[in-house]
Image 1: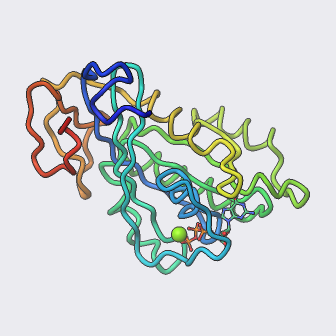
Image 2: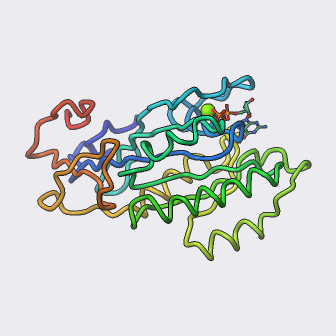
Image 3: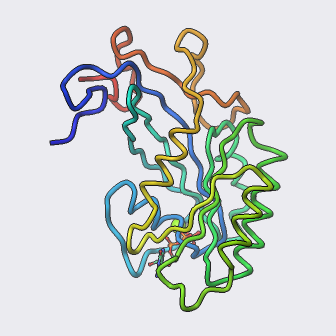
Length: 221
Ligand code: GTP
Ligand code: MG
């Protein structure tokens, strides 16, 4: 039986719940929505529809003493939506930049997203690079080592993933959750909505002292 948010498996309350805004970026059809669908619902659709504008979903990850709640903005990769992207990555504490390992152009595009984030997003944003469609390695065009070196040079988390087989999907979100700063509740009361260029700290809810305030009911035990 899995523990509810805010509760450890042994029934004792977790210390805190942290909310973080996470954005997915990358060229159209690399599998951003599929990664989110796999992480949030454990599903995969062969005929996933191309995203229009953006989609919003939430999911929680349980660490030892903290429940991390991700507020996920799954952006549309089609070029005509590019101008909307800053609205979603501004104020984000984490980003997953996705490319398709069978398509070099998508890796080049991922690099330009990383540059844009480094210039325009929160200075301490945690960026993960996902080489998706790892199940299609017979059609591989982007070498693992090339992407890993690039990620190291740019201090990015890096994993090859497959939304289809679920390989490394939960692991990637967990790695991000671990890397995010869980700052003290007394010092962070700012929201994580769109439009702010805030710090990298997430909104921390002390479950023992704060009632849920329309934040999705995640404080209720
Ligand atoms: P936009 O919304 O247009 O930006 O695209 P997207 O990045 O959200 O891609 P989407 O998740 O819609 O996936 C595009 C296609 O790739 C769909 O047909 C998916 O079924 C397929 N796909 C996604 N992830 C994987 C994967 O890991 N392996 C394989 N084999 N196919 C995948
Ligand atoms: Mg999509």
